[in-house]
Image 1 (tube, rainbow, N blue to C red):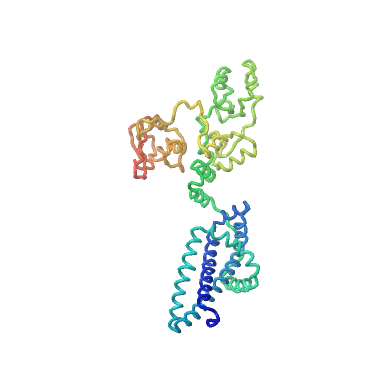
Image 2: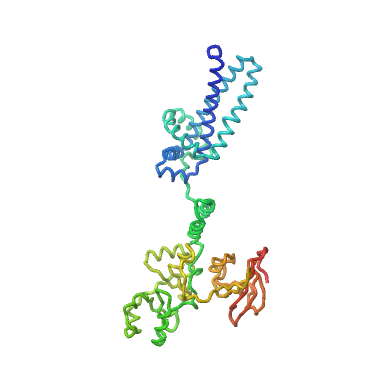
Length: 425
């Protein structure tokens, strides 16, 4: 061949083989580097290259066999041409030097450079390559099949099956990572909403419910004028109706049903006829479960009960939605804020405030895996009702007790979080 083909022709053929080697090497890295979820998304949108790449990667052993077959073929041909050309130019010493030069050329131009490019921009390389490989695989299938049979036989001995290529579902924590890594592709607001949805199973109805002592309802044992006052002052669309105390609830009243009633028609008997059956849910129910139950039962409010059947609080559909999207309504009944700023980094806080609400409104990081209220956190840590002016630290936040009574802490002062995060007295 060296005598029949001119030197320029051999060098041109060698350059072509190096380009083909670079193509095979780069496309292999690109196909293996593709994000399978992005690939599936593009394929469903009708992208031809993505669709072919997805089909090829359903059997990665075949496409790898094809790539290696082509890559090894061109590399061996290149080595033969270099040997012939070098020997023609300078004999045996030149042939040895040619092998070294070819190794460097393949390493730099046919391996490192194309594989680096493919790793950085896999879709730009893989999609055009898939258009070439898909028909090429059909043409060279007998050779690829023989190669794969031998290779898969070796893998079989080690317990590896070629069909174990099903796209695995992401876990919740993996999805959280994907959302966090989305960066500017998803706005901060939407990213927070997605994370909140993923966290719904970690939050229970106990975390968002209105506690027992804060439930606003209608006591049928009250005087008519008192009941009318409660109805007139209520900012809620649904109210529990009970006798004597909330544990003796008899039903839920939708305020819309009172719209066409005159003051004379608004009697206790009328209220009883307008009531609907109360809906009870056990404490500890995850919000994800409760959201589905609200949807199935077409309910918007539920009474949370403990293992003894005692009512612990009320949870509404709005409470769950606010866990996802944040506060989207302003309750006119909340005239007194739980947090009052006393300066740039000092706040006077109602100790009955819900810890999760404080964290959300103030961007604090108080622990939420224990008591639900700030008073509960303090009492759990100190194991006693503290005296006014007592100081402690929770999760790095300095807390001063401002006001207490016989059975609870009423008001505290919270300062800016300190570097230390260990709670201490």
